[in-house]
Image 1 (tube, one colour):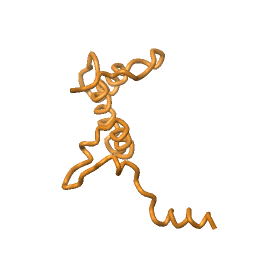
Image 2 (cartoon, helix red, strand yellow):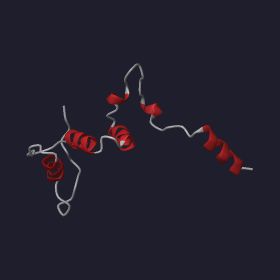
Image 3 (tube, one colour):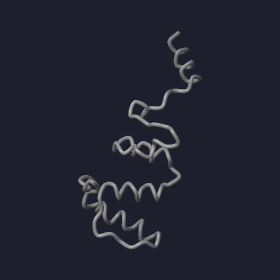
Image 4 (cartoon, one colour):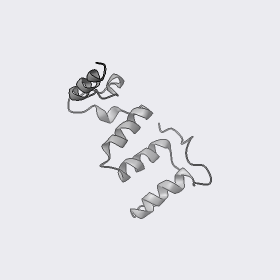
Length: 97
């Protein structure tokens, strides 16, 4: 079940429905009369499809991480923060000396 959109733009910036419809109309799609948080995120993903880092953090922030488990990989929230690369850890440790 989709959650209703509770947060969003203030009246001076426009509504979430207006923002989604601007993107949809530009793509030649029909307008929507209302939107849910899930629909806003779907439209954002369609608009920024190749911006994986943005999508990843949206998925983690909203707890919608099912798509991160695929091809035998199982994503769990304990993996939400990526580890520092070893080269960076070694540089950080050098600062302690």
